[in-house]
Image (cartoon, rainbow, N blue to C red; front, top):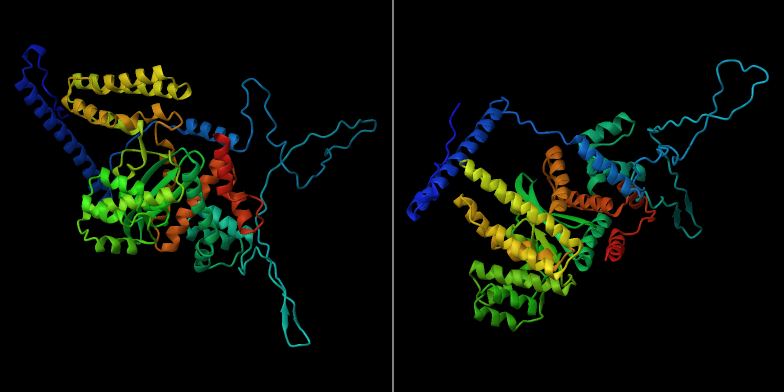
Length: 539
């Protein structure tokens, strides 16, 4: 067994400034060696996989029972059912079921004369009816005396399709909610007696979905205009064989996805602006000055203040006319104009954006996730027992402060606010026996205003767990089906992922939603309208 490298222990009396510098330098080298060894292990695993062998197994504790309990409770709350009080009698699981068929069964034995009837013992059996139901619509044709031809019209729910609303809803539900692949869906339907080709399956999943796309876009505009905050995150994705990114924007009331080829700050602002163009106004000019855009360009843009540029081509042509050819200057001007467009389209003035400290999300009122901040400390590699003790103590201090911030959200006071600010300084300005840990704590302390935004805005969350949960479903689907191949396929993936997650947050059955929209029943209101009502009730 190889002996692990550790930094030597040096007594306090021997720790001169020169010794401390050498010790810090040595700690950095040892940490680098540990990381290289760890990366070498990962590469060995990759080589083993490429050779057809198995990599080293990792065993993690099962959280199945914990997750199952959370899921059942979440489903109960989503369906509007009250939580069962401990000690209360069990409720009937089938008492609310709709009975479609009732059958009376008499005892097999002969009933003696004089017996008295004592009622029934009910036994409910749940089942599914799976089968085809093919309908031939015979469109009557009549010719009028003046030569015109009158023909019967198909029901609106069919929209000219040879597949009924229930079948289309089932296909969309299985593909977007249950992550069943297209080949498996085709195989399943054919085994049930449905004549469908791969091309028809692709058409059912992608074509004529403009109504869904518009409803999804309405979620973002409504959410940004009425919400106090949104959490954001992104992850990698594949499209047409190339690496790309999918960005999540949402909160506890809605969810919105968009796939793009980049994840720059300009890209994020373009997502928030939702195609409403570029505008130079007070908000835009203030941003440009803050990021030190040369004054000559600021004055040139000021001459076109309150002028809107409909698309990127018109905006870039305007920058060319000003002689702005430095990439950094063009980026600052573009970011500022997109912020100006955001204010024009009605984004909430106090909208807070909570992120994991990725640079592209640092716009508007920005807050940081405490979970990601603590994770940096957790990832440090201790080089000896002293380092291990200091890391454990600092992590304990951070989680204690985090717990107190959660309590502050419930009962904010000025006195408590001042105390928490002082505790933040004490935690992240402390000096430990691990130089790398000290540097990390100082770096985290520079984000004090963003980590303590909750002291000014108690309604915002302390983490981005909601975004990570929402985006995990997208990652799962990509692992099963791979990347998208067409622009329409990518658009539909983002749209139905957004609608499904939003339905779940608003307590609407995704199956009922699909059936309602496909059949044109329109009993379920538009999701942006439901979102508006939900946000109004929560404020």
